[in-house]
Figure 1 (cartoon, rainbow, N blue to C red):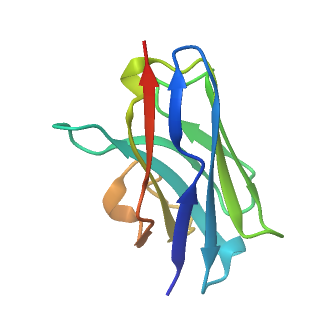
Figure 2: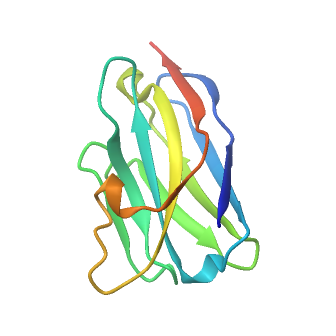
Length: 126
């Protein structure tokens, strides 16, 4: 069983930056693909970014490409989401998720992930 704890959310002005962290425990972090998702009020959860178990490949939603960067430190059992040039439409609760990685991984799809954190609120003011 993997436990995930997100941190780093907060209130920021449009154009600002935040870095989210997700600390994992209870599993072999280095074998898991990690994803970031978000859910705004009244909207469905949506994919934001993902990274393979070894950091060798990353995936992004079109809405965040060029602004967000996902990375991981397997020695620290932590995945990060660096968010730059934030927009009010980025306001949401951000969740990290983990899944045993595989060649047929569905990195963009929430149901593929087995474990989820509790979420951290990101609010971007205009």
